[in-house]
Amino acid sequence: MSLFSLHTPPFTVRIATDSPTLFTDLSSLYPDEVLRLQPCPEHIYDFHIDYRRRFSGKSRPYHFRTGSEHFRMADANQLIPTFEWGLNWCVSAYQQQYLAIHAAVLEKDGKALIMPAPPGSGKSTLCALLMLRGWRLLSDEMCLIDPGSGQLQPYVRPVSLKNASIEVIRQYQPGISVFHRTPDTEKGTVAYLRPTDISWIQSDTPAAPAWILFPAYQAEAEPVAVFTMPKADTLLYLAQNSFNYAVYATEGFRLLSQLVDNTESYRLEYSDTSQMIELLEQLLC
Amino acid sequence: MLVPLLIQCFRDPEQFQAKASAACWTDLLQQARSMGLTAQLRALFDRHKLLDSLPETVQKHCEWGWRYYQKQQASLFYELFELEPCLAEADYPCLLLKGAAYQALGLTVSEGRLYSDIDLLVSRQQLNDCKAKLFFAGFFEPAVSAYDKHFYLELSHENPPLYHVKRGTALDLHFALFPLAGRKNLITENVFASASPIAGSCFQVPSLSYLYIHAAIHFFWQEEQHKLTKDLIDLDLLYSQLAEQKLLSQLLCDAEQFGALEPVVNTLLLIEKLFERSLPEEVARQLRKSPLRRDFARFILQMQLQSGTKAYIAGTLWYLRGYRHKMHWRALVRHVWVKTNLAWRHYRQRPG
Image 1 (cartoon, rainbow over the protein chains, first blue to last red):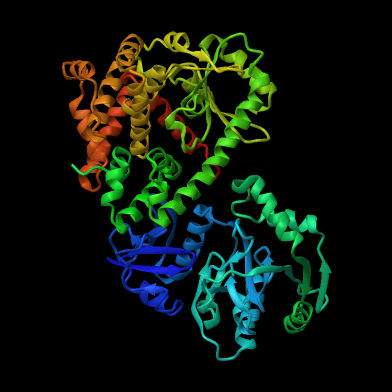
Image 2 (cartoon, rainbow over the protein chains, first blue to last red; image 1 turned 90 degrees about the vertical axis):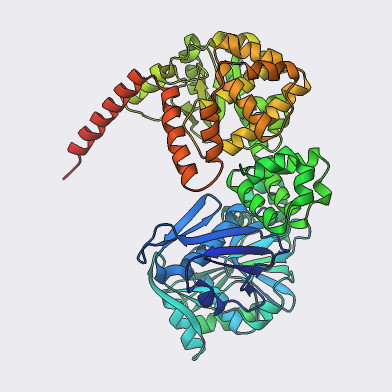
């Protein structure tokens, strides 16, 4: 049984596992100062994750649990995707420090771009592409709004690429390291991209929201088209895609109203990724 | 015997704080979150004026829990306000039970306590009328089999759960405090006699001693194992309030008249031992000589608070014992027979 820890601001996690490979596999995704071989004895962790085979036998699956709550089981070849999803589940289900929205967040020149979108819209691909073009990654999964300041708190983790987006990224930047390509998961083939150094270095530096962008990849559509989104529609969409809007109640409405008032919102339909990136950077920068 | 961290903390939060290592705090936060007790932890630290001196991470988690609790509390009060106009027309008492009653009375145990449904008690004779009123207010009863309906109304102590068609609120409408199949002959009329109205509301609440008795019954005469620590903490907080108001002798008297002295005696003994509470001498004397002490049941209960094989064996024994209390053996044999037959018939009729 090994015990190690993950210090990804603003949350820390202590992990107990009997997998002989989990730590090594994660070390290709997280830097040494984030993934630590031993939990720090003086540190109080936000989550304790138990990721073990609950019954003996090498073919038995691993169970991802926190406390008495079971998330799901994983075969040995799907340890990493289940770990990453499980960590997202812990944070989205239990943290109430921030108003959390299911969205990718990046920053350039002090201005943050929020990209909320359903699966299949090209959000993660776009997020990875912008990160490779020098944008700082705050998160590819969770937009955390600090209720006190209205600023966006980073939660830097590996970027999850799915199915066709893996090849899009490889073609965009040949030779790039894509880690833990795992076929046949419930989301298809997934793989992970390590965040850039600047993203890790500033992993606890908040950013001010400037734009909200709803990407929509449509193979049959125009190469690229941008529309301004009505603010009311943006607010409703953000509320529907929030993990804890109901818990925040009136404060949640205030925070989202403030966010929508202080940002510009666009819908971006595209079929040509390179034209879209070019237009997007012209529009925003 | 090792006492769970949460019980150690509720027993003496000052001492816990003084001794807890970082790993211990991590484990405490983990266990509290699993049992939905984080907000109750915050309330505990607040009552003991320890909040500001807690480690930063513990304070942060307490605030996470508290935010969620505040949302739940607002939802509960909103739901009670929605129920008011419908049940105000009832010319019989409608009593709030468990979490809703704790909240309505503003008891210490309600501070930070989460709830999953609203529990109401009406007399058996008024059950149909009350249901009709609730149906007109938008509640519905999901379809259940004829046998399950019979089970609820003739062997259990409540109607099948009702749900609001729009808000999704779950409402348990009780006509007794304990399953009739247990044949405990509890005198439900005493609960109504003890009740007092809530100012400005159509609802009533049982007296504090009956709230304790209800919690004790569902703790000591049941088979569930997953929330023993949480229930013990509820009982300790109710006990503390009874002790403050010098109502412990009244509690024993009410429990005896109601027919549920056994769970009250044994839960008080557990609280005395696990939370190291000093019972008043007169009450302690009554408990010492009580023929209703169930030493083995208390032993297996405490074994379950540990982990490992012994806890597993104790849990199995507790499960069997709990069913013996909830269902008289004749009712249990008939229930198992009918359910097995229904399952077999269902299996035979499966498509293909």
